[in-house]
View (cartoon, rainbow, N blue to C red):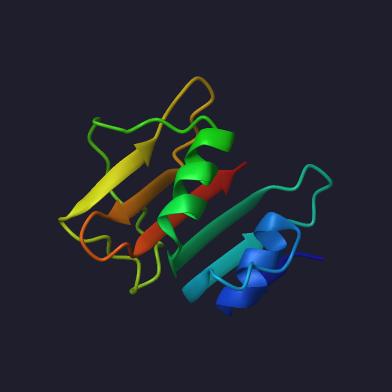
Length: 116
Protein backbone atom coordinates (compact mmCIF):
# COMPACT_ATOMS: atom_id res chain seq x y z
CA UNK A 1 0.00 0.00 0.00
CA UNK A 2 1.14 3.53 -0.65
CA UNK A 3 1.62 5.93 2.24
CA UNK A 4 0.29 9.50 2.15
CA UNK A 5 -0.18 12.22 4.73
CA UNK A 6 -0.56 15.97 4.93
CA UNK A 7 0.19 16.04 8.67
CA UNK A 8 3.56 17.66 9.34
CA UNK A 9 4.50 15.40 12.27
CA UNK A 10 3.60 12.25 10.34
CA UNK A 11 5.41 13.47 7.21
CA UNK A 12 8.56 14.07 9.24
CA UNK A 13 8.30 10.66 10.91
CA UNK A 14 7.85 8.81 7.59
CA UNK A 15 10.78 10.73 6.11
CA UNK A 16 13.21 10.55 9.05
CA UNK A 17 12.10 7.24 10.52
CA UNK A 18 11.71 8.84 13.96
CA UNK A 19 9.76 11.52 15.80
CA UNK A 20 10.93 15.10 15.34
CA UNK A 21 13.11 16.48 18.15
CA UNK A 22 11.31 18.76 20.60
CA UNK A 23 13.18 21.87 19.42
CA UNK A 24 12.12 21.37 15.78
CA UNK A 25 8.93 23.31 15.01
CA UNK A 26 7.00 21.57 12.20
CA UNK A 27 4.64 23.97 10.41
CA UNK A 28 3.35 22.04 7.35
CA UNK A 29 4.06 18.75 5.70
CA UNK A 30 3.11 16.46 2.86
CA UNK A 31 4.45 12.98 2.19
CA UNK A 32 3.84 10.28 -0.41
CA UNK A 33 5.56 6.91 -0.60
CA UNK A 34 5.02 4.24 -3.22
CA UNK A 35 4.21 0.67 -2.19
CA UNK A 36 7.40 -0.46 -3.96
CA UNK A 37 10.16 -1.98 -1.80
CA UNK A 38 12.70 0.62 -3.03
CA UNK A 39 11.02 3.34 -0.90
CA UNK A 40 10.21 5.84 -3.62
CA UNK A 41 8.88 8.99 -2.00
CA UNK A 42 8.17 12.71 -2.32
CA UNK A 43 8.28 14.87 0.80
CA UNK A 44 7.54 18.54 1.45
CA UNK A 45 8.11 20.16 4.85
CA UNK A 46 7.85 23.67 6.20
CA UNK A 47 9.65 23.93 9.51
CA UNK A 48 11.52 26.21 11.84
CA UNK A 49 14.67 24.42 12.96
CA UNK A 50 17.36 25.78 15.20
CA UNK A 51 20.43 27.03 13.36
CA UNK A 52 22.39 24.16 14.93
CA UNK A 53 19.92 21.55 13.61
CA UNK A 54 19.94 23.06 10.11
CA UNK A 55 23.72 23.31 9.93
CA UNK A 56 24.13 19.73 11.19
CA UNK A 57 21.56 18.47 8.64
CA UNK A 58 23.40 20.14 5.74
CA UNK A 59 26.79 18.89 6.95
CA UNK A 60 25.66 15.33 7.67
CA UNK A 61 24.09 15.04 4.22
CA UNK A 62 26.81 16.98 2.34
CA UNK A 63 24.27 19.42 0.88
CA UNK A 64 25.88 22.43 -0.83
CA UNK A 65 24.46 25.88 -1.60
CA UNK A 66 22.65 25.69 -4.95
CA UNK A 67 23.07 28.59 -7.38
CA UNK A 68 21.47 26.96 -10.42
CA UNK A 69 18.00 27.89 -11.61
CA UNK A 70 15.15 25.98 -9.99
CA UNK A 71 11.36 25.98 -10.20
CA UNK A 72 9.07 24.34 -7.68
CA UNK A 73 7.28 21.23 -8.95
CA UNK A 74 3.80 21.88 -10.29
CA UNK A 75 2.30 19.55 -7.69
CA UNK A 76 3.88 21.38 -4.73
CA UNK A 77 1.45 22.21 -1.90
CA UNK A 78 0.07 25.76 -1.87
CA UNK A 79 2.00 26.54 1.35
CA UNK A 80 5.36 25.59 -0.21
CA UNK A 81 6.57 29.13 -0.91
CA UNK A 82 10.15 29.84 0.19
CA UNK A 83 10.72 33.57 0.67
CA UNK A 84 13.02 35.72 -1.43
CA UNK A 85 15.32 35.85 1.66
CA UNK A 86 15.90 32.10 1.42
CA UNK A 87 19.20 30.48 0.63
CA UNK A 88 18.69 27.41 -1.57
CA UNK A 89 20.65 24.21 -1.03
CA UNK A 90 20.83 21.01 -3.06
CA UNK A 91 22.39 19.51 -6.13
CA UNK A 92 25.43 17.32 -6.00
CA UNK A 93 26.46 14.08 -7.66
CA UNK A 94 23.15 12.22 -7.38
CA UNK A 95 20.59 14.98 -7.86
CA UNK A 96 16.98 14.00 -8.49
CA UNK A 97 15.77 17.53 -7.78
CA UNK A 98 15.60 17.69 -3.98
CA UNK A 99 16.02 21.24 -2.65
CA UNK A 100 16.22 22.80 0.79
CA UNK A 101 15.58 26.46 1.67
CA UNK A 102 16.25 28.53 4.79
CA UNK A 103 15.10 32.11 5.24
CA UNK A 104 18.17 34.03 6.43
CA UNK A 105 16.00 36.45 8.43
CA UNK A 106 13.26 34.31 10.05
CA UNK A 107 14.89 30.86 9.97
CA UNK A 108 11.74 29.35 8.44
CA UNK A 109 12.85 26.51 6.21
CA UNK A 110 11.36 24.44 3.42
CA UNK A 111 12.39 20.99 2.35
CA UNK A 112 11.48 19.26 -0.89
CA UNK A 113 12.92 15.79 -1.20
CA UNK A 114 12.30 13.31 -3.97
CA UNK A 115 13.59 9.77 -4.26
CA UNK A 116 12.27 7.89 -7.29
